[in-house]
Length: 602
Image (tube, rainbow, N blue to C red; front, side, top):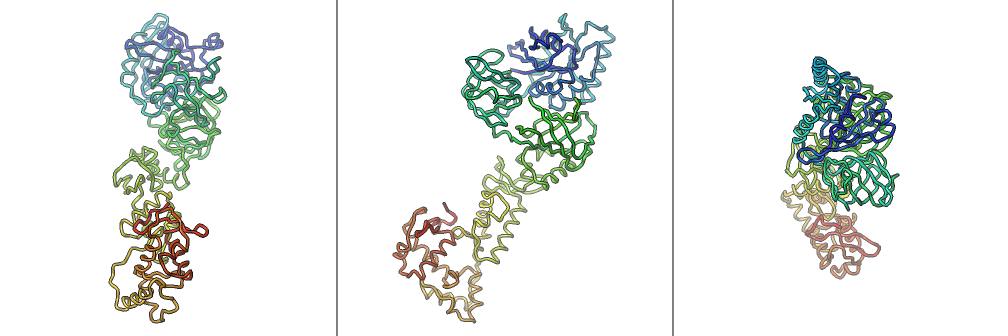
């Protein structure tokens, strides 16, 4: 199924053309029929020669309803730009062509209507005039079909041109999205929402989410062009009845989707802003008021330009009156405040919050590249470049983005220079402190905690540090001990599990004690007792013998493995806690890690 739509100046024969194509009049309001003026979106359809259903949206042509036109344009596979042969290219024709350009509609057929009202010379003049105007906006010549609705001239030729263009259409790969353009109540069925379905298939019984409200619902029934269906696919006009929802929860502009994570909901959005006509340059105020329109909604917004205010592509941050759902790459129309004139085209970069530094960096990229380079086309890669880290679906061990190297750590990528800075800071900290809790390293890294932990393990694996329980320590130095160091170490170890009291250390031995600590050969327990690391490792092994991670034990339990008084046992257990092996919980200790399983904590 496909959706096409009309666009063009008021009274240029759009509704008559739709009726000639489909056999039905798309105007549905009495005042529309009385005034021969489309006010809101009209809908009709026909079946083509390939037995495919073609839905047609007839949009308002009058400048007062320019925002309603956007509601019809956003979902089109193909647009018919209508120009009457007697009037030619008009002001609203220009506006509608600008909106087609701004909304990213690339497949367009120009349809000359009312050919029966002019002679051959006039028809040729109008056709050439229209082609020139079109080329000035789209930078290419358009396909043109000449028609007359009353006589049927060109209608079959137009259908063939439509079929040939639609045969080249690409599927929309994103999750199913229906942006509500109408809602109402049907007796016995309940609340119903209508709109154009884009993206993947939507089925009866599926759970959906409405955005930006976040309301959950279940698809009760689906109708496509007035007929019941079990599912609807990309390019279908759909009416959905939703279970567990009221009409008041179905406002125009709300998006119905099965995958809310595809969107970011926010009042603030960052855009690339570009002129409508090729080769033009924008010159905007630093701060100004605009209207923004996309899908079936429009809103007032304050626009703030970061970086250059003049150029072919500018960076703008818009703050809207209402929260809206956004996705990267979405097209929006910027309308001059208080008028119906299209100001510029907007393309969503992201609706995520950006710090001032990130915005300035982004503005510099936009100015240098006149937009975003291909390497930053996805939101994930953009944030990876701006932040220096981020998650990515890529699985390579190393990535290069804009000349910078990123290293993969689990599901994350981290800029190599930031990884090196983390290593240097840890080394500096460990020069001052014998031991640094892993949790402290994570909190002081400035990185997400999950990534910071992966960085710590990466440094441990690279022998730049070691993990003892839940503490990071300097990597073991392999330098040989001096004779004095060997002698003092042997003396300390000779004291057994009671350790060597600090007060027994002679003044001339203090320098040797310092060097042994730097070489990770000894530790001082609570400033009172000196142990060799080998002796302390044996103490840990004995205390935790036969225990599993998560179990608890008392001081009395520990003393069954070590025949020591509380004078020695309590400082030793406190050191086990400092090193992340246990956690004190009242009168008991809970095992967090076992010898040989460093880093495994609950």
